[in-house]
Length: 240
Image 1 (spheres, rainbow, N blue to C red):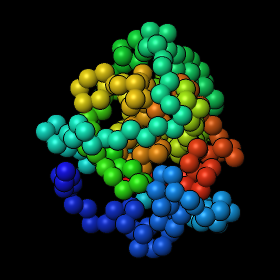
Image 2: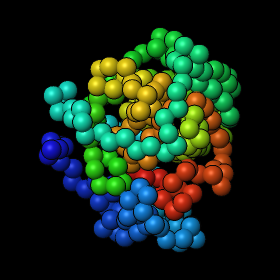
Image 3: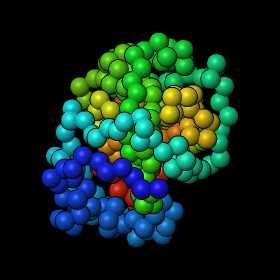
């Protein structure tokens, strides 16, 4: 199925990186599970990639959104990392902690009392496929407002029930289109897509979108565990 064309941009972030030869994804990636060059090669390019992509990110500029009629219900493929964990939404607790003034745990009922944001966006996988999906959930910036990150917080870690892990830069995490999602295409989020809670945003490649998220941690520093695929050579920033 052909994807509807998105609003034309003069030069996208990723295209600029490709033209400049700086994209870690272009240098290192052949697919979500493909063999990669060594981690040492990634370490040479990654700091420069990160600085360039951080400069290109517009923290308050929205990415293209689409009409509900553009949704492609069958196009979102399911990439399984470690099986599908079965989580009872009635007992689920999202832990939000780290470099914050008010660490807390939020139930699904707590999250669903917060303002609901829906958006129809393109999900892009590094494997080369894409899908237009309607997501519904809570802006991560609204969760951050509750816990009040301290000034030293620069990164956000996401831990999942299937032992997947990810990290984002703080400006991307607080982008107005970065959501903690519990709806897909107007219905409750299916377990195979990350229920009860997953991460979704139009500004990052798909492997950054953690499913079955159980903990969000604000931190001043990145540890050696930057992300499941990043620790195997993938680009860390992964911006679109």
